[in-house]
Image (cartoon, rainbow, N blue to C red):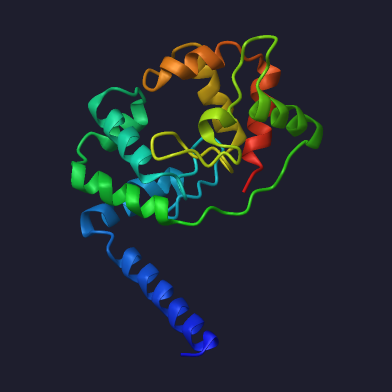
Length: 201
């Protein structure tokens, strides 16, 4: 088989696989995406409002954990707790797989000087205040792991809110390590880190 033919065949397989995966969103999960998730996060996980997190390209295991935490009361949110209260594990897995498979959109950078400060803290931390580098857990590009969230391209305002909630222990799940970091960040540092990582692809 010639290289061009092989490449065409591979491309077709990828496209078909993508179509099949999209079609595999079960009817229960699809109804929830259409009636609930899309209102804030968009049907493709690209929320238009900075108040709500982008879910596209987020790790499925992380999404599963957060939805279960909302459902089971380990993470407090009047809105999300209500949205997740009747979701069973199968639907949660389906929703997580759907949003994680959506491509991350193109991000626009903000204030370059502010983002420069954030880049330094993200990559190296702040040895003077004892803040660890964000990259040490979330990766140098902010892509995270199956257990730790992808931060790259997230709404900066949402990231700032989460950092503040971690710092004050108002976010009551996943806060053991994040509290020790966020509580040492100044408001400028929070703003700068969010501006930097929110502009990454």
